[in-house]
Image 1 (cartoon, rainbow, N blue to C red):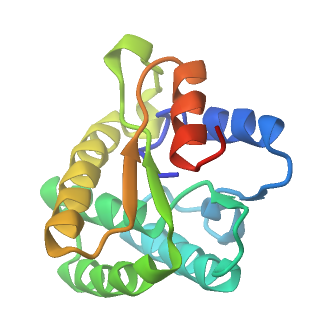
Image 2 (spheres, rainbow, N blue to C red; image 1 turned 180 degrees about the vertical axis):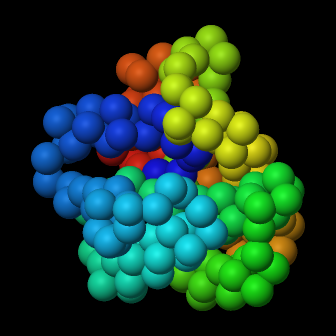
Length: 174
């Protein structure tokens, strides 16, 4: 599951898991890093490493859904760069990690920001980064598709119920 923060990923995963409890859920990698610092390049790289490790460990399992994909953290690092808060060395390394992890991914389900179903975020959630990441994610996915390096990608839109139905179809569950 990919998307910027506060886009509806967690709600969708919760709804999906309620309907398909046979799926293992890999939670938000932020919960597995030790960081008191605000979201920044180092935090995103740490989360990327957790995500890539999880993808490798669960490769071959058919019933796994992940709160975030490796592509998310490349998009966050790209967004930081666009906002003048980035680190080119980390961005380059992240690109390599993401490319190597794509072989372990069957489907990328993207939950973009949707103004019709907006989720408000407070200023401490960095709305500027949220918007920039949402744009960067779509660009990074386009780049992967053009290079032929991406697994199947589905963009989930609409209400929470509509998104769930779209995800179930993309996963071949209905």
